[in-house]
Image (cartoon, rainbow, N blue to C red):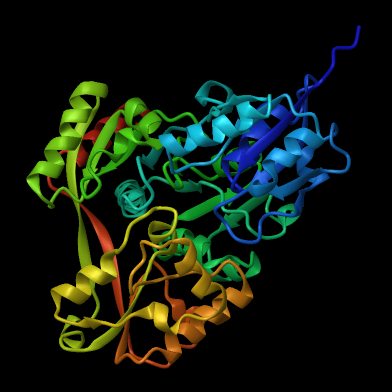
Length: 441
């Protein structure tokens, strides 16, 4: 007797959604995934998840629609189940979305680590967070260099950012700047890959993480899973490192799936712990209540400023990391801190914004003056360039992990700002040494 297949929609943002499909639904004969919905990232809706990735059960691929169409899609496809599959969204907002789905008669579901984490043949450290912009990237770089200096082959597997031609992004390997160009990387992708390339670390990313993992294992002694947003790992870690943000105390209990990371962590790093003591105390209190087994590290993100003497008294346009300011919800980053520290006057970038850059300010109304480094397409990169160049500023403070000059022509002097991880507790290296002794020697 043939059982009726369960019709499914996967809600996502070109990352966790594709991974959940690949690991749980792709070859599962009990389900019929009728559509993906997409949000957060521009220009990813109204595409097809291709047959090359969708597998034998989906010879025509799977359509991707804007999330705004969800109610109509549930009715059109007689959907039984909606699987929520993206990150850095408040618990309240998750339940609003659940209520929409339930009111249409469908089930609302979250897939967990048991069904979605891949197992590696090599030792794995994951670096994740409770919110976007907590400091994962500097921390991952720190860990990668720690083991590289000891002679180990370190490979980073990065949480996905497949915003281009999905058929060409099944497995991506980045070892040179030319690889970034060849893969037509967005600014967001470059912000994550380029610093590792600078340090001589190979990065893998893409869409099919089973294939990505097996490729990475061939050239690695240790794998670092570099998380995106506040998602939990795609690969089962032997050591799960999670950053909580002392500038956003309490958020570790308010956002999905950041709280999952918080409760699962083996090591909890209180990032930006050089802020107000009361903020740090709130995070420590929550650790003691909800994950007392975790080792606690206090850390700061040390500001690295190129030519600080040029900043004082200047009118500046500040460019910050895009995801941190947009769906990460932060109103400022390293560039703003540096500008204020060295006595610059920050001009209002919004007044000079054009095209889709102007639309970013309408969508993310918490942004004031600061320019997020948006660049999901050639058009948007050109609009970013125009916004920067027509701003009436003496110089540009570039607080992104990349050199924008590789992508755009900037008509003003540029000062580069970055963050580096610094352990205030002097305990993190000991934890990494213990991991080395157990898994690498």
